[in-house]
Amino acid sequence: MSNAYDVIVIGGGHNGLVAAAYLAKAKKNVLVLERRPIVGGSVVTESFGDGFDVDSVWTGGTLRPDIIRDLKLELPASTAPTAPLSARSPFISLQSDGNHLVLDADPVKAAESIKRFSEKDAGRWGEFVRFMDKAANVLDITYATLMPRLPRNFSLEEGYGLLELGLDLRLMGRRDMLNFIRALPMTAQELVEEYFESEQLKAALASVAIHGSTLGPMSAGTGYTLIHNWLNRGGPAHVNVGRAGGITQALAEAVKACGGEIRVEAEVASIQVDMYKCKGVVLANGEEIFADTVISAADPKQTFLSLVGPMNLPPEFVWKTQSIKMRGSVAKIHLLTDEGHGIPDGTVALAPSIKYLEKAYDAAKYGEISKQPYLEVTSVPVRESAKESVVSIHFQFAPYALKHGTWTPRQAAAVERETVERLAIDILADHFVNLKSSIVNSRTITPHDLETIYGLTEGDLNHGQLMLDQFLFMRPIPGWSNHKTPIDNLYLCGSGVHGGGGVSGAAGRNVIKVLK
Image (tube, rainbow, N blue to C red; front, side, top):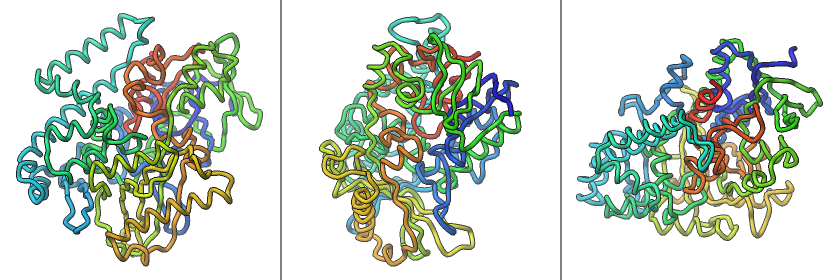
């Protein structure tokens, strides 16, 4: 086994594997080091018992079409955003009277459901979808554009990228361009109120904006996160539900097929640094592995404060890294059920009003688990012929930093874990009376689990909150937005850099442009 490579990639999540696959395709001698026994990071389908296979963190997802094309990936049963509308599932917002709002992928069918709440809103739905699709496309182009290291070290090459981005913005048309720029700093409430009047529809869309973020629909910048999540999902509903692991398995196969090497159960303890130059890594078992280049798919805080170490970095850089806002507040409840749970296919959300969502967020601001949480639910059959299915519940808000209570140690954490699970099941049982009796097994993943098992600092799904002061050239920190670091030959490619957040793979692909 070699101990010297062209490139070492730390972390076998989707971004790390995307970067490794491109490098291996370019005939680089690449080694991927993954701490867990399986690759995938937080984009993984794993088993919690017989027939209990779940998308443990991300509910499905899809890579950028150009990545799929470039790497010739064969993804299982993909229902990517480019697939026909008929192949995609609906977004269902639960209503107390059972008259649920169904936002079908087909705008005409969605308008029919909206009409029950507002004729005016039904008439404007197509206009809203067209704007969101355009805005998501521009954001997609933005994520594919390397951000310069403002306010210094601006290069002419990076300037060309910004020039092309400006042209793409202008090609949207004056009206759509201005609306896109206006939408980014707006609150989700303000954005949806510019189009719609019915509380049911406004709340359903606002819930998409706050998904995975410790923000409320009245928080500035949730106009941006609404567009971001719309882009990652290809609309309001999730895609590839129950098949997230297929994405990273296909990427791992692509790495190996191109000659790259992947080692699991290979935890990196430290990154070797000598006079601000990266030499390689040291594993937890003491093994030293050398490389010309090291790329970290871990989040910036973990990379710099734990693996590199503050003593090897400029003091100002350390302070800025410590200031990155993580603030995870998501728990995941997975239920193995029989076929009688009654939950419909699609993405099912509990978001009755904007005020309800804001109150759910209020709890997190004070370090409390929301008693009336925002929930998003998906279900998938265990097997085509099986009579069992897995119900996965995304629970917000359950803050990583609890004011009263703790996620550790195990005995104390069991109380909070049980609280989250019970709340989710009891609330959903009000809408689906057979849910409780259908449960065969359960598994709850807390914010602390997201940190210790999946490597997500503070349980933050996006390696850093998607906020106005942490995006574009300010992600992960101002002055270091182009994947480079103060350490020569050390680069970042995880979700914590520009283009990250969700399952697009843009961050992993973009680092390759810097290495060329």
